[in-house]
Length: 313
Image 1 (cartoon, one colour):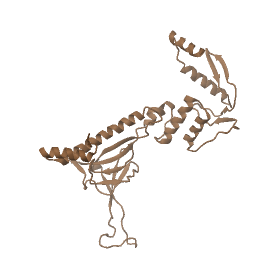
Image 2: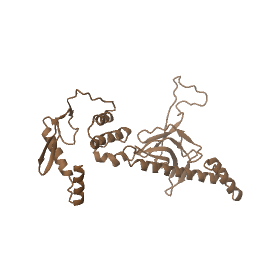
Image 3: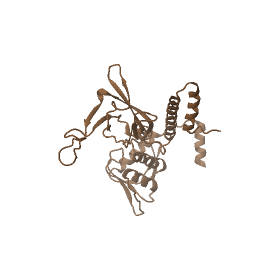
Image 4: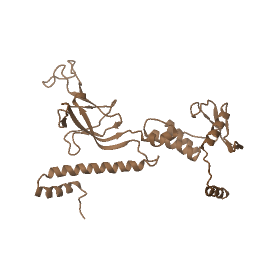
């Protein structure tokens, strides 16, 4: 047994051993910290991958613990913030000068997929520069300093341009995973958000489990963001124009114990829902045609026998 899971203890042990032979305990500690960060990122990615297997647990955004943002000097922009004027707001005590900027702002562009940043640092481990409460505006972040003049790693490129590495900590990236994993099947494309996830789940529940009272209320709440209520005196539910994928303007579903219209047509069993309105027949025909198109012909005798056995049960 040992307490090496405490990285301070592990650093000291590795450092003492390494230093006793070669020296350079600090380098060993930095290397261990970097490997630890990489392992934590792999663990986080594996959790997100597991969560994506279900529409209920999928994460809205992907998480990265450390993201290296490369900024070229040729793309770097800087603008002045406040120009103190002689209007009584400021006291000119030798530190402030008339019409000279109080400080300058560095404007840095970030990839459009990044939706939030936890912090900005100059190094992955033991940073000497750290900024929290980072705000992204139009895919840009503002820095209260020039990173090329601070303690950041700056590299000279072959074309003589300079490039600085700014580390973005605990960021969230939008890869449209909600849509590419589940939303595409429903033909619903919305900006990634928890509300979009709720709409996908509520709509899928209605399709899979039927339009029960609870499922309909969940769907209404997901779409509107407000709690709904269905009372016993509701005679029906009118579907607004554009609600269906088909161009229909007047369709209403009758509420209550209404018998279904069941009959044979074109070699299939047709079941019509209790709907009324000028487009009711069009709606019923559409449901029937889509049902016919979704039928898969079964010719395997064993499968047919199994279906008959289930029906008889």
